Image (cartoon, rainbow, N blue to C red; front, side, top):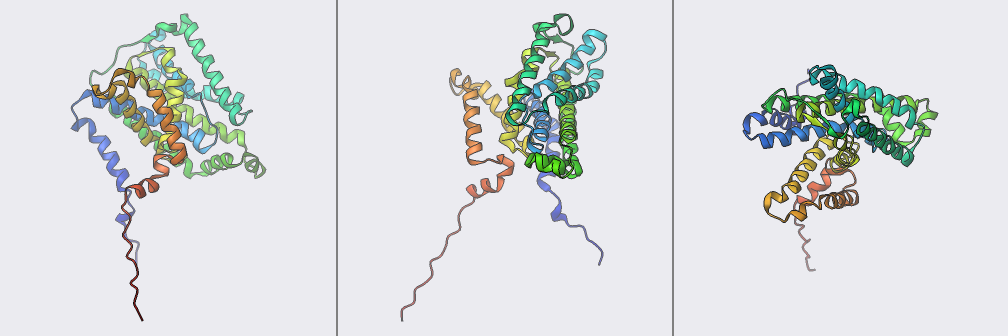
Length: 333
């Protein structure tokens, strides 16, 4: 008998999720909710990129703001210095960030563990200081302001959705290839991987190149969408680098779909605190969002170490009702 197509093998949850995202801006007429989804999709790209390097390759980075900021400034400087459209800068935002990633990898991959993480923090601060003080080139703290191309948010939404699908799809394909197995081998035991003939520097560099490329694209998109950037935002350790880590941890480090889930959760939480729970609680409560995020991370690490996606079976067990166990009948003699 010939092979028959098995409908049960289709991942319906993923298909329905993508279908919902495609139809969302057409079904929802509110620019406010469209904006939230645009930002969430941008964070899907950043979180997935960070997860490839840190979750799958084991190189925990606190410096992804570097690539985000480089991509954003590449797009912005195309307008201010070359009088060209920032969309041309977006095409180069990814490649320029990739080149920066190669240099940073050459410097930092000599280090391991916490020393690598600290090095990425230091280099991120260097980039922020340069952007703040090189006023003749970056406009300093004044920032870069451009004119938005589209008044409607729908084109930006579908561009963000396309970037998210391209990023997640590319990472999924890479992880199914030889590179993916090498990344995981380096994460688990770098010395053992090198003993088997795997060049740790080469494959860590490849992981960083892919990660920095998509993060740079996200930064260039941010420049075109928000139409304004400054060093305190795009090179921020807190708003970009730490947020990328939170997205990965909450959703699930070392999972394909974890950062996507974590991105929507974190954006929803951020907006909820920003709006003081939509006016239901005092303003001072919303100002404690950093404390709440810290407690959330502690809770996830303690009870769901694999994140929402990795520990989804455990979450389902919490909601499922235990079946009643009937006691065996005792028969007298």
